Length: 232
Image (tube, rainbow, N blue to C red; front, side, top):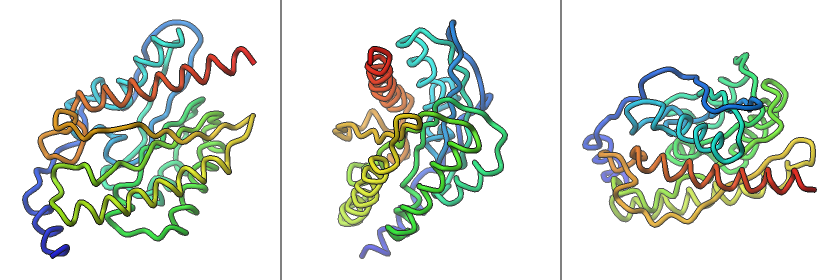
């Protein structure tokens, strides 16, 4: 049953392209904050027409507005990327960053990456972001809750949803272990009701509205944390 459902989803789900437009940009005024968005299909904006309305562009605009800084953003990712593949991309980059936002997990769920390997790959990725790009802040976004993806039928949705929760729980523990005063590593998880308008027409990736909502939640939390640190 699960194998048949998985094959059916692959055959019938529309294949959406990555977001169009430049992979880097700048918005706002004031002191510059270098933002690097890395990871899988959500990092490269699948489901949005262009990067201005995908995760990187939306997030940059919202952070700039909330903290009053000029945000120079860049995308580094690949549709279908796992944590290990993303690590290779970061190891090869010359990009510099103050803040790195990591969007991963769906492909590791689909490829049935073991928990031990997932932890190793993400830990190595965080270290590479810190050493290679200079990122002082790394945000690990929640592994997307596949149990709420409209494209997935039951029971496949329930099984993959349980797998995504396991990877995300490991991600949260890893962030807590790696977090340090001079090199912050945070795990961001938000309540999500699975509303259909937040998904693109494939029922698998975010829509422009979904990216905007996600970016708003991330930017709001980052701004709150930044304000708290500035008053310490």
